[in-house]
Length: 263
View 1 (cartoon, rainbow, N blue to C red):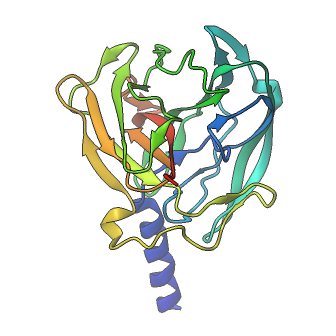
View 2 (cartoon, helix red, strand yellow):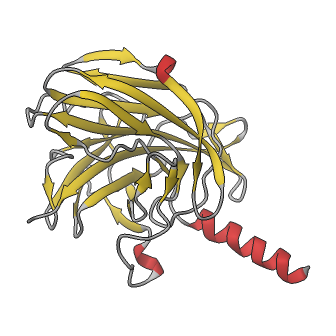
């Protein structure tokens, strides 16, 4: 039993050591035409097929196109998401995209208590889906408490290219922000609400599961993307609120980008 306890403790530590990412996943961020888009939104560790954390219903879920904001909270459905470690509460939505241009989806988490660290985490996550290669809103600053504003089209990056963004809080740059980077190494299987059991790449060492970079004095960062697929960037603790229910609160900014294979 001592070994069981030790192994369980190790698994708990290992799962929480990886970066936390609020996902807003759909297979393709660059679409030739509109129609129904399926979104899956687990709070998990995508690079490691890791633990799925049960989060409360988000404070907000909405869509912005050409400056117009649409509340999608009524289209949000609670579901489950399965990883190699567990099955946890997740959220999903089915939304119809109309016309050409950029579609910004924003998921504002309710604060989540990470018991192993005794801190609350609240992430402001966004992903941008383009229809027809016609840009419209992708570079918008939404004035979120914690936000990564892209300076590169997040859906039109070559494999081997780079992504540049600026970390902001209510429109103001956050100097020297710490940013965690993860690759969705286990492709989500939409029909199963689960990560694939097989990784896309073999990482050379654990240090590559969650990579850490820092923004410069202006809050700007650039990351070279070595592999096609979707990558998540999480700027940690950049929001103005630092306490929640008497405990430390980390308000993080998350953005998802997609690199495309050169053929």
